[in-house]
Image 1: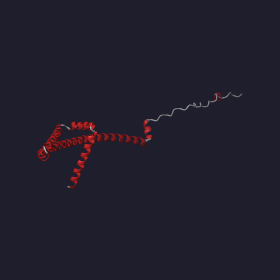
Image 2 (image 1 turned 180 degrees about the vertical axis):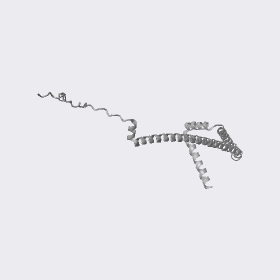
Image 3 (image 1 turned 90 degrees about the horizontal axis):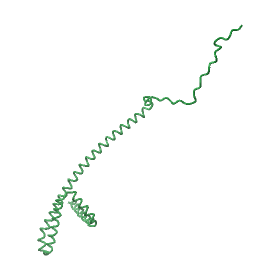
Image 4 (image 1 turned 45 degrees about the vertical axis):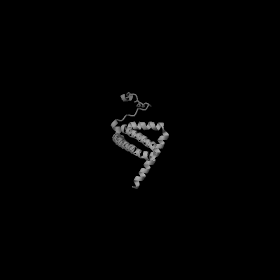
Length: 177
């Protein structure tokens, strides 16, 4: 008689391994160290760019401070020069007033008392201008000049033209000496 099948034969046939699911699994994330190791040049460029930006920002701030300091110095020197110029102008106008006053007697004798009075009146007006120049500071003079130009633009343009002509003549005369 034939013996029954061996126990191994009695086992059901082994199943085939299960098929993986059709969905894709998310790729495994790499650690940060592995990521930076992939692009060392890009990371180095980014770090260098950040360093350059930082240094440029520091340099710009330093240059702004220097420019501000230089502007302050220039402003102070310009104000000092303008004050000296104002003082010299007041002195020159005062000298002109004294000269007009001194020449009024000569004008009286040569042209008559009426013309001598004109010279005295002009001397008085010029002396008042010299006193006004001497008493006012630069800001007051600038404001007064601005107001005069706004009120009398034609006179201002004429005065500027005459002043320009006189300065040109003075400079031309001094260059030939």
